[in-house]
Length: 166
Image (tube, rainbow, N blue to C red; front, side):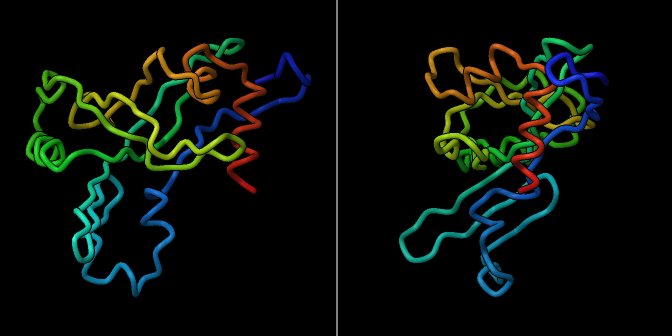
């Protein structure tokens, strides 16, 4: 796709994270007996008095201003234990999209921005064959949230991808 900003061709790829940052940073030894993980769900058993933590892989749609369709970030969101149980029990339910949205927090740091870990999001289940979808509140003043809500050009998306590769 030819970029209106730089005139170059940009592939349409979606930036994504393989795991929540806290789990990605752990060594294999640290994970032993504490981490349940697959490509959709992760749980981290707390140590001592620390509470257990629960994560789900989601998408965050972003409108492209100068290209057809939308693109999306692939994020991990941290959720409450009760919501984790709800998601686990509804994972294969064809009617899971009827479950009301639930509060969550981003579990990944986006390069080039003030810390994005912990940014509040709303998580909505979309169906057993699609990842849950995240959305931001318009009340946030965080620059990343503003860009995602307003939409970006394909060139900005390419900049995001380049920052992820560094």
